[in-house]
Image (cartoon, rainbow, N blue to C red; front, side, top):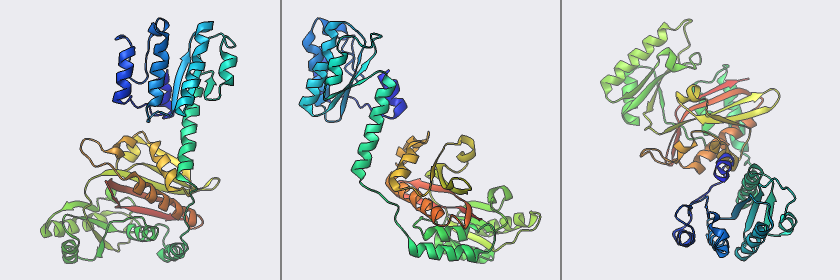
Length: 384
């Protein structure tokens, strides 16, 4: 029950350190368990000192902040156990929790347990671990100190001017990334070109391999229109790619406005995230984070919050994702710098909050993350 509720509420249950495990193994029978959760077995009835020794060993472990023990019997001898836990918790400057599982709700030991100053009495395992999760959340908040979303007056004014100058209902990818860069959102480098030869020159300058994308305010979904070419490694591939994307753009009906072709360096692989936002008529600006790329619609693994959010709140959103483990490194991939990613999410949330009267929605997808390298390779901003 403890293990299930700990997982449900996100309360970590690390395994005992080696010195503590050795003490537990010396007192617990082979059919018990010296792991966490720890099963001292009914052998403590014939060896009363064993319970105190095992509980004390666990409380001595620096990685533990609280000892949780169920009370499953309502008879008098067992009623002394909460007092034992309370004294041990005092010695180690920690807390103990007793979950009253017996149906004798006011049985022996309840009054004494309620009067203990280092022991909390709960009526269900769910309530106990819910309280522990809240306790840890509060401790994290206190440790982090007061956090505010920093103001960016200069960036706000410049971004507002660029949003107005964009003119159309939808900003081009390049315009959207230029605006977001004012808020310290890391974006991929790029050049806008008008011919195959210019594309080759840009690729040589930016470095191979490169990506080609037709820039048009009328083509927000470029993949479906066939106006993207990836991983081009030679000048010949770039020229051929330029011709192909322009030919596909010409097939779109009605004919889109075309500003040229963007040449970008091919960003190495990483965890693809999406950071989106919209301004809801009732709730105001909202920020959403999730697994990005093609996984957005497939997994629908996202977390939502009113904007703006602090970096600490952004980390909380990341922790809500089912795929959060991918950010810790998976099958040889680099673990993502969560603090840096949280800063980027916070910066995007500040942008949408600052310009809630000017934009309707925003989409940064994908945001490619690997180690400290976090790069927005595509962005979409729709004006209100």
